[in-house]
Image 1 (cartoon, rainbow, N blue to C red):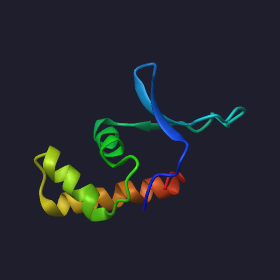
Image 2 (tube, rainbow, N blue to C red):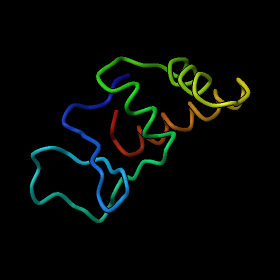
Image 3 (cartoon, rainbow, N blue to C red):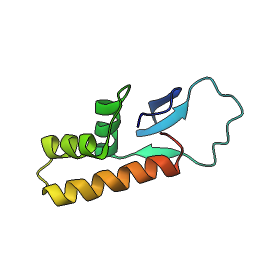
Image 4 (tube, rainbow, N blue to C red):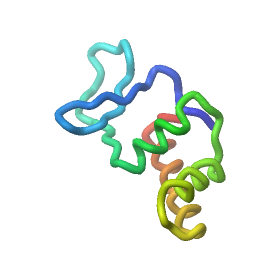
Length: 87
């Protein structure tokens, strides 16, 4: 999978949020904010094809977490991206 084109992360009022470039009149009632680990994953995987294994490896490389926890978190993160229509 891959992030859909046109989405960028911007810092707004101290929060990192995902926005659609060049779209005016967008419904801003739903803001997608990224926490520290989501921002790391976004930055590491932007512009690349990635899988659950790739996400898991980024988590393992950057956090002291057990492999089972990293797998569960990677699956949950990808599910949330899909729910938000970002991939």
